Image (cartoon, rainbow, N blue to C red):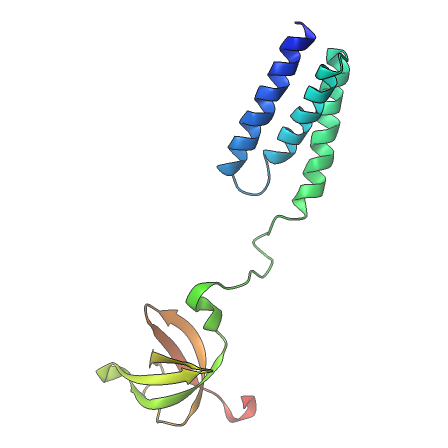
Length: 148
């Protein structure tokens, strides 16, 4: 195969792998797209097929090790997004929480949220901890005296 054919092969591989990266997680295809681009540069410079393949493999492996540090693993703590960012925050009950009647509101900083509790009614004025978000309600529990 001529070097021009190898050039188009490596360009096609780089584009295919870069587009495939969009549909995969964890930066798996991107290093190989970088390696294919490096091999395409050698093909353009009229270097033989064996060095192109070696450069593709070496550059791909180096890029793989470099990009792996940007992948978030399941055991690492991820930053909560959306309403889940409120989990673990403190709030103050501004309208008594009565889970039986779906009543209750809390103020957290400048926001007012509807609230419920799995631990029973909570009177107005009590500081609470946000345990989870269910729909549009915060699930709260009273703070222990030692946690205040």
